[in-house]
Every structure is written in C-alpha cells, then in structure tokens.
Length: 632
Image (cartoon, rainbow, N blue to C red; front, side, top):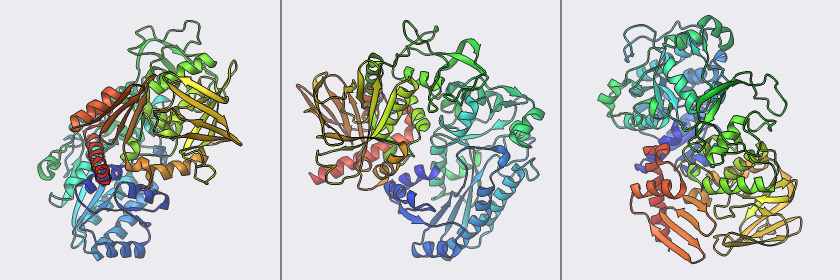
C-alpha cells in the first residue's frame, strides 16, 4: 500500500524506479505507476542477486510484507515474520553485491516495552517478551533491524511506522478492522488506556522519500503528532464509519476471543515520538493527527433511540448480529431519520449477501434519497436518477495506481466517502449492489463500448451492462458507467428513447442489443449480449483497462457528470460542457482551480483525497495535457 503512493512520487521527482513483485499479474500495475516491473520472489537468492546486479540501484527500499486482508490477532503474522528474517537477509546480500549505498527498511513503532516514559523514542527497549504471538513479531522485527544496521558497506535506515490508516489499510472504511468494528468484534479493552500512534499511508510514503535523500543511518519513529488512548480513537473511528458504539471488555474476557496477549497489548501500548524524524529527516506528517481523517471519515453518526436487532440470522443476511443498532441521522433527514410515507421504512430487511441494511441506507443517503423506494419501475427511475446525478464517473483510482479487484464492498465504501465514484466496471458494480439490496433482480451482461462492429471484429469486453427487471414495466437498461449516459434507465425494447434533451436508439442485434449514443456523446454506443455474466468474468478486463499502458483509462484522467440537458467532462485539465445549444471548453489554470472544479462540478471532496494525492493527480493531468497538445 505504501509503494503505490511512493512510486509515483519518486517517478515524478525524476528517479528511475524498479518495483519488485512476486506476482506477474501485478507487473502491469507497476508499469502504470511509471516503474520498471521486476517479477521475483524474495526467497530466491540467486535470482534476486542477478536482478539487482543487472539494474544497480543507489537506494533499495524494503517494504516486503505478506499480511492477510483479514486481520486475525490469534494467528499472528508468521508469513511476514519469515520475510522479515529470510527475505531481509536475501535482499541485503543482493543489495551489497550490486553496490547499493543506502538501504531503507520498514519496521513498526508499536514494538516498545510498556512503561514510563511515554511516548517512546528510538532508544527505548523493544518488548521482546511480549505476551502471545506478538513476542515473535517483535523478535522478527528486531532481527530485521539488526541485519540492516549491521550490514557492511550499506547505510541502513529503519523507519518504524505507526498503525497505518488510509486507503488499502486495515483501518480504511472497507478494511478488516472497520468490518470488525461494525460487527462489534473490536472492543475497548479494559479502561482503554493503551496509547496508539497512527500514521497515514501518504505520510509513510513521504518519510521513505525523505529518507532516500537525507538522514543519518539509524532508526526513526514515523508516526503522527497525536498518540491516542484506545478509549478515544476507537469510538471516534466507529462513529466515523457508521458503526455501533464499541463495547468495553475486561482483559481476561478478551483473551479467549482474540488470542493470548492481544488484550494486554491493546491496553499497554505506550505510543511513540516522531521528534527525531522531524529533526534529522526533515519530515513532518501532512496528517498530524488521526482525528482529522481516521476519526472524521464521512458517515452517519449514532443518535436517537437504540433498538435491539433481531437475533434471527437469515440466509439472505448472514452478516446479521444480535447487537444494538442506532438510528442514523443525516443532514438531509434531520433528527427524525428517513421519512417512510408509503414506501418501505428503513431498517433490517431480507437482503442479498452483498449489502446489509445499514450499508444500503448509507448509500441511499449518499445519493440524496430519504426514503427506500419500492422495487418497481418508479423506484428504479428514482434510484437511477439519484445515483447517476450524484456519483461521478471517474478514473481517479486508476490514475493514482490504487485500483483493486472488483470487490463490491470495497467499491461501495469508496462511493460512500468523499464524493467519489468510479469508472464503468466500478460504478455499475455499486449500482447493481444497491438495486439488489432494494429487491430488484439485476443481471450483468458483457458489453463493448465503441464502434458498432467492434463485437464482430473480436474486440474484448470493456463494459458491464446491467439489465434490471421490474414487476410492472419489464426490463430496463440500468447504466451508471458511461459518464455521458441517461439519467433514467432505458426500457429494454427496440426503438428510439428520449431521455431529457438526449435521444438514444436501441436495436436488437443478433444475440444481444445495440444502444446508439446520443449526438453529444464521445462514443458511437455500446453493445451487450443476452447471456448473463458473473463479476469474475470482468476481472481480467478490469485489470487490463486499469493497469495497461495502452488503456485510455491509464493514459488520461476523466471525470464526468450528466444532467438532463448537458454533460460536464473533465479530461486531463480541460473542462467541457456539451449539450443542445452548449459547447464550452476551458483549460484549468492551476491546482486550486483543479481542486475547486472537482468539488463544485463533480462533488468530489479534495480534502478527502488529501493534499499529496491531489498534487499527484494535478501533476498527471498537467502532463497529459501537454502530451495531448504535442500530438495535436
């Protein structure tokens, strides 16, 4: 996760960067970020030495981990501990053979023995006899550090990172710990006095960037300025992600569930000081306190009357738990919650596995709906219009090298926070999840956006098309993944269809359908087949379009939002407004104008993106603009 933020920054600064992965599938992602991909396993000493010797590097950055997507404290971090010992040894030998001058390695800032004084500095002793499997983690980390600092002919730098939060981490809204907090499986232990030092992933990348150029060999704590007790940060985090208030549990009761020692660790951590890193590396966190981000993620706040949820766990909702559920308050709803009128009231429902009731309700609020629409044609139109109007078509994740697999929960969490959206595969995946949670039957179809004969020429799929079925008006094309598509769903029937000021034409074509785009669109149209498809069918196409250097999604930043009579498009740094009687074009002059345009035109919060990611995005847009000018 740190590498995804570090590599683009190094490349933009003029460094030649080689990125190592053991997975050939991830090589394209490295290329998209501007790095030279190297496919190699850290345990293959001979190949590793050959790779580094063939491409000598002044600096080697060791960020190798093998952590599971789902945290299990009782299981420990055995795979990563092995990497810390054996992988570090192999990488050091290869670096020395290649003549590397500086070696930077990732460590942890929560390895210190508890007790006064606190927060801890780099000279304080590690907790080598920590309880449970954490002792092995600490010993493996110390082994890594000593190998690096004692390596002959190398300038070794150890960066002890705090608890990482931000996109792609366990503490992200779609991360492992966030889901445990929602399920009330992450309690405040004892009195919650354990002190936690957090660190945003962008600040971790910035520290590596700084350490590559300056600072004496040695150990540096890389943490924010605000160590926080568990009783403060955990309830704030739960509130930010719309989770119930975390329970309190005594140490003795926590151990059987979380693994021996986990409770002691949570209640005894002492936090860490970043004074040395600030003084010697010239680094300071852009996110000086977790409170500005980890504890302030957009989401509904607990309020009002608490109700006991049903203890029945149904096959349709396997995530149900017997726990307190808070009524949600939202600025659009007021303190009384969502209005019910003649529609189904919010609350527990028989839902598909994909979304639970709370997430469904958050999505409805995100798109401005204060009622749960019925699963009929009128409800489909209402949800479709609200979704397309408020969830922008955008490829920001692709541009920043942050695109992941098409995992519905992760994509839903992205849409819920910061005004974000996604490109075709992503946006339609979230729309389908919401519609199914509302009771609609929705089918995915393989689609191709482009010329009408693209299918006959054997071009691969590049689009998810959705067909939503209604009991009173038959099937509709539900489409949130075009950026310049209709605000309302199109009836799946041959003939012209008027949507606002735009006209589409739908035609039957072999074993599928052709949808001709309106006159103000940038594409001829799209075709989709009759045969339903699974989400797995689209994963390779998504990987290709989100990482390949030849993909237009990788080559150019695009953000779009349609309305009834015009379409607003940001392409690189040029803003277009097209529609009947409108043809506007304006080049954005600077980064503040770029951020303001994302906010005002598309509803994307620059603050949620963060200054570093916004800077990188603007740099990419500027470079793409210059490249386009050179080609025209």
